[in-house]
Amino acid sequence: MTTDHAERRPARTRRPRRGARTVGLAAGAAVGVAGLTGCSTNNAFTRMGFPNPITEQGKTVLTLWQGSWVAGWAVGVLVWGLILWAVLFHRKRGDRLPPQARYNMPIEIMYTAVPFVLIAILFYFTAKDENVIDRLSPKPDVVVNVLGFQWSWQFSYPQYPVNSSGGVVTNGGYMWGDGPLPVLEIPAGETVRFNLSSPDVDHAFWVPEFLFKRDVIPGHPNHFEITATQTGTFTGHCSELCGLYHSRMLFTLKVVTPAQFRAYMTAEQAAEKAAGSTQ
Image 1 (cartoon, rainbow, N blue to C red):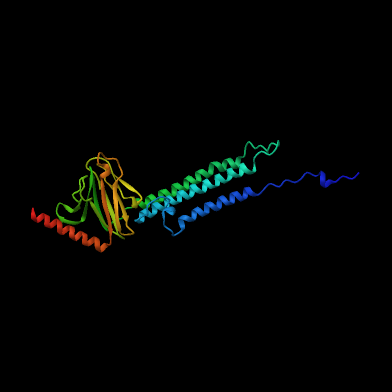
Image 2 (image 1 turned 90 degrees about the vertical axis):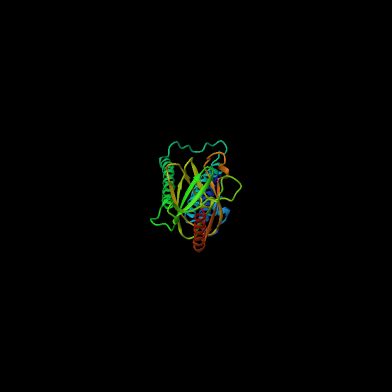
């Protein structure tokens, strides 16, 4: 009696390679998301909800924000891909119990090391970009002294004095009423330093298009610099709850060309001198 070995031999089960394909797709998706930060397209999607930055420092903030999202999406896609792979291709089949593994030292070391590596990378780029944003140049092109008070703003330019008591002051006569907002005018393409102070309570100097804010704290002067990259008119806010009329503590930011800024300073100086001569 002959035995058909082909019939008695158990059928070879091939483990599907879709798991590797899933991981590959996850990695490809992560690379695709990473490409968003390198592309030249600037829109609400690539900015991931951030306003369009109008300063060099704002671009640095946007890059850090995009990189953080890319890292988060890469980790998320990889984890989701591995979960789906385990659910779809390692589920229980029939009554056969799959191989059990209690300890796997290399994998456990990897689970511990990878988060530390990710944290170290994020910390490095955050610290590096913070140093760029907080850097103060020895000789800025324009200095603006910002006084935040309940509930308005006052801006003075000490480099353009008109009398011994100070520089050109602009506040628009606005005092949480219906009058014109205070106007802050700065030149594009030049380094502008802001010196922030408050005589009463905590405020916060915030222009959304700067992509960061600075606190204005009594007794603790604060400073930062920006270099505007485009002209335009924008609205500034106080982003620290400071009392009853906090929501009305607004100002108008005008970013103009350097020539227009010099003309504005000349006009403000002439107005200050005319006002002083009539007193």
